[in-house]
Image (spheres, rainbow, N blue to C red):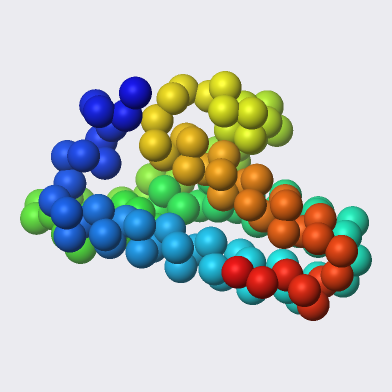
Length: 125
């Protein structure tokens, strides 16, 4: 299913870099969730963080590619914010099948599940 995914056009070290960036962004989101009191507020924050990740992370990844590949121009790759329907398709894994899309869905589900835990101080990465 993923054999033609663009991740596999990268070198092993570049793949590690992409995974590291993903992990750092996830840990940052989890730390922000820890500060939210109450399930409802944490769930709302998880949705906002998921939305922000889907919308803004392409720029973070592009900056990594810009630093890694020679000749890439410095540019903005951020587009319009994702629609609720797009976010729902990511969470239900009905968006285009790719490692990126499925990773975004897992990112969203992990934040939602952590937000729904019983106590705000108990949310741990």
